[in-house]
Amino acid sequence: MPPSTSSTLFASILCVACLATLVYARALHKIEGVPNFGSDIGIGGSNDEVPWPGIQWLEKLSNIDEYSFTLHGRTYNSAYEAMLHPFSNSSTNPVKNFNAYVNSFIIPHYIAKYVVQKYGIFWSHHIITYLRNLIAGTFVYFGTGAFFHYHCYIHPRSKEIFKNRKRPEW
Image 1: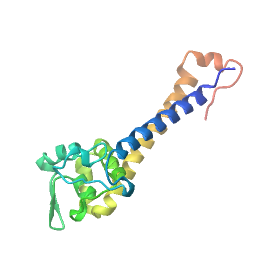
Image 2 (image 1 turned 180 degrees about the horizontal axis):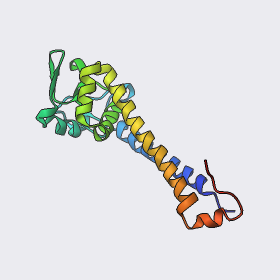
Image 3 (image 1 turned 90 degrees about the vertical axis):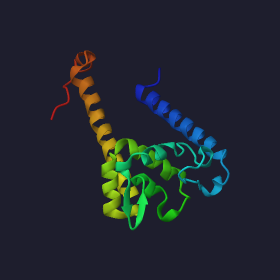
Image 4 (image 1 turned 30 degrees about the vertical axis):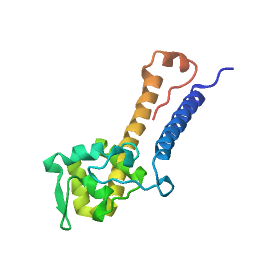
């Protein structure tokens, strides 16, 4: 008996997640000081100092003048710079760097800047990451619903599937 589609999908997702973890761990292994998960996020540093995604994305944000702002007497080139190294602390967790990198694609910078100015440096990372997860969860929820709807009501095979039983309804 062949494996079910859902078990094949689950195994595929598990393999991709394991592979991504191994690649990330391999990248961390090449960097000194990995046991404390520290990394140098200083603007202008070399890429060897920071695990993937590095700091080029942060440097690109710092080149846009409208992203800079002042908070508590200190000028930041972007909201993500403020979240990654507050109070001139150049050490940050590489997972926080990765989260900020992903957040910069999903959350518009003017929202990130507003959140940093309104709620401060510490809470802004958590709020923006929550907003990112809310947006992603909404896409997953409605995407799953659309997939279910398509296969139950639109796909030509649905007539065969529901030939001897009632279709789902409210």
